[in-house]
Each structure stands twice: as C-alpha cells, then as structure tokens.
Image (cartoon, rainbow, N blue to C red; front, side):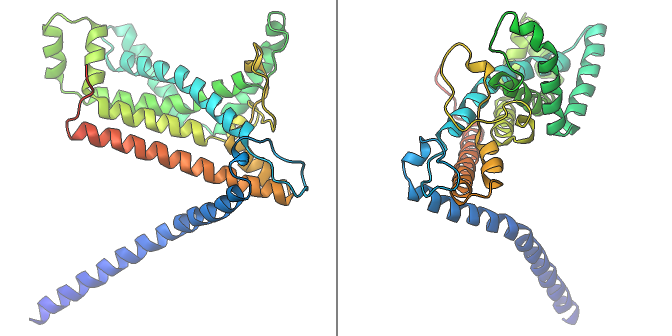
Amino acid sequence: MRLVDARALKSLALTAAVVLAFALSVLPVAHLMATVVYRGAAAIARNFPSILFDIPAAPGSRELGGIGPHILGTALLTSIAFAVGVPISLLAAVFTAEAIRSWERIVGRWTRLLVHMMVEFPTIVIGIAVYGAMSSVAPLVRALVPGFRPFSLLSGVVALVLVSAPYMYLQVEDGLKSVPQHVREAIYSLGASRLLTSLVLLRYLKSTVYAALSVGLARMVSETAALFFTAFGSDVYPPLDANLLFRPIGSLTLAVYTLGLSGYENWIELSWAASLVLLLLCLTLFGFSRLLLRGERLGYRSPR
C-alpha cells in the first residue's frame, strides 16, 4: 500500500511540474498577446474606422492618423509574392521528388542542398543580397524603365519569395517522398504522364500542400528584416500607375518597427494598432488553414 501511495505521489508531483512548466512557457506569449490586444484596441478605437484608411499624422501632433498605406503595402507585397512563390515551390518540389534520369537527380540534390542553406540564412542577409542585385542591374534597367529603383515593391516581392519559397518547397517535397511507391506505380500503370502523375500526387497530398502554403503565406505576412533594404517603407499611398512596382512601399511589419522606435506618442500608438492588425491577420490565416486541414481529415471534398 505504501508503494502504491509513493507512486501516486510521484505521478502527481511530475504532473504538477509539467503543468507548471507549460504555464511558465505560455505566460510570456499570453502576456505579449494581451498587451498587443489591449494597446492596439485602444489605439484603433480612438480613430476607428479612419485608422484603417488614413495616412499617419504628423509626428508629435495630437492627431493619430492611420495605417492605411501599410495595410495596402502588406496586401500588395503578400499577394504578388504568393502568386510568384507558390508555382516555383511546387514545381521545384515535384521536379526533385520525382526525378528519374541521372542528371535530374544531380540537379535535385544540388537544389535540395541550396534550399536547406537558404532556410538557415538570416533574412536580413537575403534582403541585402536582393538590394545589391537590384543596384547592380539598375543602370541597365533604367534604360528601359526610367523609374526603376533598388528600393521598391519589386525588390520586396523578390525578397519575400526567397524567404518563403524554401519552407513551402521542403514541406511539399517531404510529402511527395512519403507517398508509398505502389501508389506511383498504380498511377503510371494507367498510362499517365509524369506531369499528370505529379498532379494526382499533389491532390493525394492536399493536406500537406495546404500546410505548406499556410506556412509560406505566414512567413510573407510576418517578415520584417528582408524588407528593410528592399521595400524600404512608405507612409503614403503609392500612385497606382505603371511604375507601381518600382517605388518604395510600406508594410505592417515595417510600420511596427519604424513607428514604434520614432519616439512620438501618436506614432507609437499607430505601432500598437499595426501590431494588433498583424496579429489578427496571422491568427486568421492560422484558423483558416486549420479549417482546411480539418475538412480534409473529415473527408470533405470540394465540388468538381
């Protein structure tokens, strides 16, 4: 009886220690999120709904202004980078995972090595590298596009693609490698081409593809360092003309950094507002991806 009591006491103590360790690890995150919600909601309520559309007010003034240009910049940067990065990631993953010929396998190995190296790169290094490349080609490009600048929406898109594409590539490639060989053989036995087989396998791995796209999109939305030397930031709306891609543009992440370090009270409030909008956006993406994955697990299928 004493042995049983001792084991029960040890089990209770270990359970309490695990619960305490979990609470201590979650507490800083919960405190951070609560602070962002409290301060951000207060700032948004002060000038709602104009804060979502106006430009920042003059620094140090009593007016608050808004973060409209930064929301638009995040939407443009993310949508264009996502449209460019997804096909590149999926095609590269299919190529390396389904390589048959010897030269394809060699290219696949070097591609895989390069992607693993890019995942470990500091994102600010990627931003500096993109800025350097854009500065090198600027004299040549300006002959065709007079308004071209190294600091631009285009540079930001390139940086975001380089930051997010490796994560999408690795998840999709790992998923393709996990497909049982008999599934591939069954598809090929029906006379399917390599392209059609790859499409069938991607459909077979829809949950993996959804997760990869969600991770890539979250990386694009939340990235800051890679945009310092590329998108550069802007507190005004960019003119919607043919040179839109070649002008600096703002983003929510850059707004959180630059406005928060400004030292002006109204800009610091805007920084909290941008933080809350960014947090809600990331949580929405996370919830949407979880719903897609849950529907896939329950066997739901989109209508054909």
